[in-house]
Image 1 (cartoon, rainbow, N blue to C red):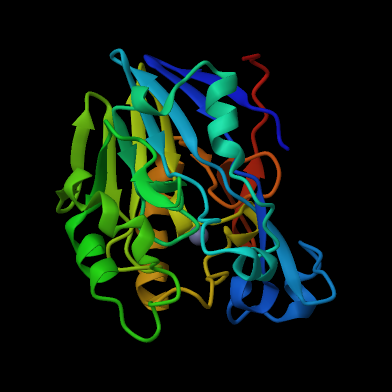
Image 2: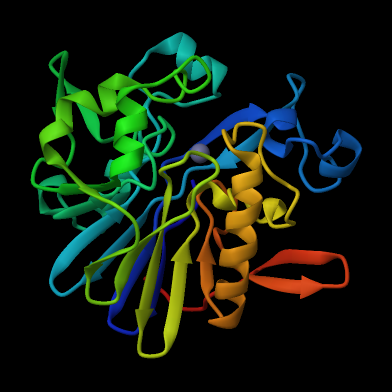
Amino acid sequence: MRPITYHKLGNFDLWFLSDGEFWLDGGSMFGIVPKNLWSKLVSSDEQNRVRLGLNPVLIRAEGQLVLLETGIDRKPGEKFRRIYGLAEANPLLGQLALLGVRPEEISLVINTHLHFDHAGLNTRLLDGKLVPTFPRARHIVQKQELEDATHPHERSRASYLNDNIEPILLQFEVVAGKAEIMPGLWVVPVPGHTLGMQAVELASEGQNFAYTADLIPTMAHAPLPYIMAFDLYPMTTLETRKRMYERWMEGDYLLGFTHEPGHPLGRLVRTEKGYLAEPVHLSEKM
Ligand SMILES: [Zn+2]
């Protein structure tokens, strides 16, 4: 398990957590990029799967605790866990406990989108019943995303598991478009992977951070055409990337990558071959 790392960004305290790892088909992860190119960046197993991280972030600001994403759903059972190479339990709650945080102390959850690998601990099983994992938290989600997640079609149905959505319908707080959720913390639409996906941006004392959601799932995905086959609207992903990359370069944003299997922080750099991501190692201790 990747150790928790801490970073202070102006008024915000950030803890980079892990909900473990999972495995997805390498071809699906890299879209039109042929294996002889992506296999130079990441290795695959005998089923052609690549290892991915699950990287929620805990934020403390203004006396509130905010959680970006809730890890992966492990509730569907043993076969589901085998397909995705998942261990049985979610490490995320143990990581919060290590920091002395109880689930009911989280006042805000930001669901970048409602796929099962991003909203999996919106609920948990307690004595065979589905209950909210973070019972006092408002869950911020784009209106478009909640609509699409509750009306899935044949190509999106496998990603939206109702158990992570329906039991907490009353806890969702929908926003439409860019919105400042608390001073210095914005949600920003980044459509493409889904139409209603949102990134999270923080700005404080001249420092900027963006949690990129599945717009840039890992650092290996930073080049513009390295777009997942899972994306419902790949050309929209390309347009969104061009717009956001420019913004994040200009503001010297520190970036958080939701599926980076190792250290989850980096920055974009522009090279003669186009955009790349470079890891940023912060020296601070917890
Ligand atoms: Zn994902």
